[in-house]
Amino acid sequence: MAEKLRALKYEIDAALTKYNGGIGAVCVADMAGLVEDGREGEGVSRLTGNDIVGLVAQMTTLQAQFAGAGVMDVIIKPCVRPLRVAE
Image 1 (cartoon, rainbow, N blue to C red):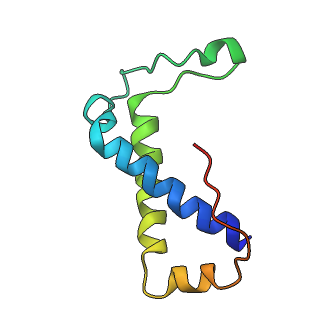
Image 2: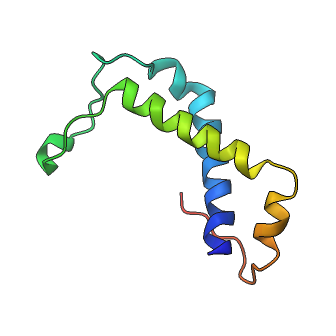
């Protein structure tokens, strides 16, 4: 679990860097702005900019939690495997 949390921290950091580096400029909290993601064919409703901004807000909250004093020290201590982050 510690290794999954460590990887999650780095995945969140990377995703927020990518979002703040340009995606956030075109994907804004706009309920009318549907994202062309092809999800209808999978039986899932299409995302809106508001859905994405909401997810980014939750990732930002988690990032702040991970950044708390000593949090990553506690998470990293039991890790024995090298860090592996999915792209």
